[in-house]
Length: 507
Image (cartoon, rainbow, N blue to C red; front, side, top):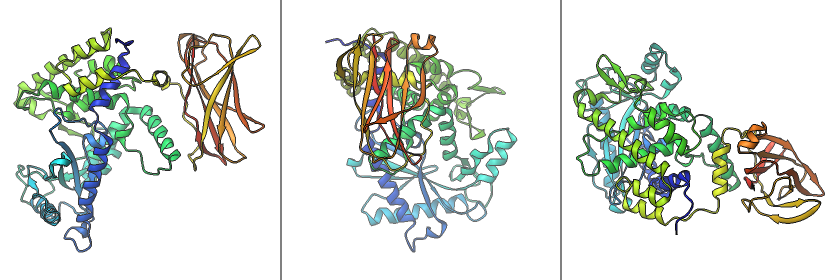
């Protein structure tokens, strides 16, 4: 049976299927933390240098995707940063020291020994794990990076996390010198987060509040936030992987170029549909892919002297491959937006998504919470964020709304129920398990052209009244479209509970 086609819902379904499962993130985190604990163990040869192990790349940015083929491994990029300076050690000695202690780790746990590559050591796990760790030895390098950013007029605060790294193909690899290769994965992640703007913080705060409500206290990682920018990068990377599935990979556009161009072009679009319409066409702009004296240049925003497209000058076929792939992506995703059904959209991506993804998306049925998803997309710009700090959490929930018109109570309905007629009176009823005293606030968000024309989109917080222990709030249906209301409970100046959005649809 063909269902009503919603391009945003279709794209969200695609993203859900290509994302790395949360269990994989947690499994990888457990593994690299175990390596870090080993390096920091009492009496270990590196413990005195305070080894810090942290993730970099797509797993840090929240843009990782599942391998194009189910049998392929996840590539987890890590940094092992030691508290030393370039005056204390050569690149070779640092890399060898980290490799030797990682070898001790593999011997201890019966693993195959680490393999050396140009910059990293790779730890391979058993087949069931389906991932490997690429560990990059590094040293702090904030001073030199700060000077460079200031020289180019960039925000020097991003330099605080810069590092010097090892590379056995550099001329100074075996020498004591300050001329090391440099990187700044933490700074890049901070820049990427800034590019996501207020939308990232809004969604992260919402997830943090949900976590508090569940009794969780851990920090919310980037991969759980999921803004349209992160999701767009994921879609583009999967599309690229499929486009180059039958090639040797040499010409495949690298992820850091795709991620950087998309982040530069992003302007806080609130939906994936808007990101595809607005961000994707801007990615090849000359302002983003510069021409520096005949050299194509995609600058690292945390190191202006680093060119992510450095191989394009010597391999112009790679630059052409990027432009060819970008045009295919434009055509394919425009076809998705123009499709009249989910079947048409899947046909447009026949060769661009894996068989597993196509099958899963084809079999998915529209979700009951479609109204909530639609309203969240529409209200990101107008909804004000709660001004209270989060405290110990209780529970509040809007149980139903009492609908009446012409002086008669018609019925009680739940969230995202059938559309109501205009000029009906609504009485929202909420229940809380929080002991008195406390304050109650209600946030109403209107959407649609009628509400916008009346300058009545709202989104602020209205003080509520607790009457005989009941939490109620009265409204009237005025504008067509989906609208929401949410109840907030504040105790001693702290937000201790919020209900989540209750959706009302009006004809």
